[in-house]
Length: 69
Image (cartoon, rainbow, N blue to C red; front, side):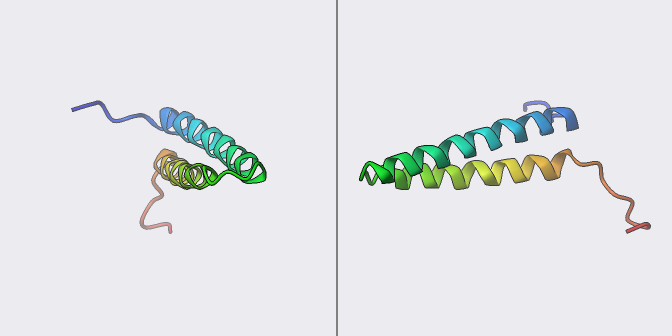
């Protein structure tokens, strides 16, 4: 079983996933402008990577005290 990433690693993974998301959106726009339906694949990849970025950002935050909030 692989080790659980630490919060700093979560933030780094979220940054990588966000970079992939931005690049996938740019690739999708370029594909659609050129008239290629391959842009659909890039849109799906952008959706997946944005979900990964959101997941790692949420996991990287310190847990809030249940009593305080």
